[in-house]
Length: 306
Image (cartoon, rainbow, N blue to C red):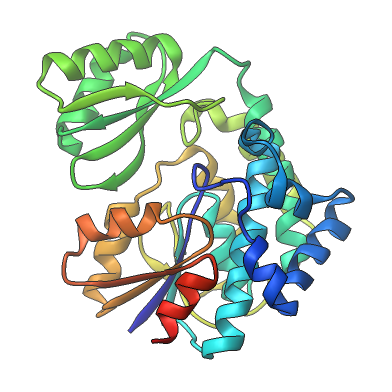
């Protein structure tokens, strides 16, 4: 069985999507649709924008989604593959829902542009932070965060792979958690260069605003199950899409469990669709027996064909 997986923030780079767009009208069409939906030149931002502009959350989210959907359309056209399951890391869950037919691309790109703004606005810059903690197991890190909170918020935000968990919350609480993690023998504990404490309780205002934006959106029948970040389990009920997307803003991304769930469901091959190979690296650590491929440019497409 094949799963299509889609990256989230942090995978962006200047030039992403350009090669596929130059060579495949189906990819160019996706970028045109994004430009029309957003009312600005997103294609130009992806193909030649500065790293600083691409790092802005309101730009990053639609840029990665659009690049991922462009690569998806090329994959569908050139190889005719369909997935048994789809999943995405945080923002990537929107790409997975486009792949499954639940969301129209034009709707999704507008929603994630707003989602980025809502997440940025939820917490003033400097108040929140995130950090990657390596080499401490989930149960110990949960307890460590509870100790570091001291009346503030800090908790696991991304369960990425064995021994790699990202925490988020108030900047001062995250600093205390980093210090405690180092004391407890963490291999690494380092702050991440992000502008907000994503997937923490501090994102509640963003979740409320996202709920309002999603309310009028029509959700289509899902052609394959999507493994949600919130539950780390597949679902195919279109009626649950909005609720899970709203919950996802404040909930931890359960990526390690999501891949483990697909392994139990006999998924043996993963194709990462979109910029970079972040998810490929994580999946390798979770399921050593899996076949992992990606598509982001001509070279990776040619490898998939052979």
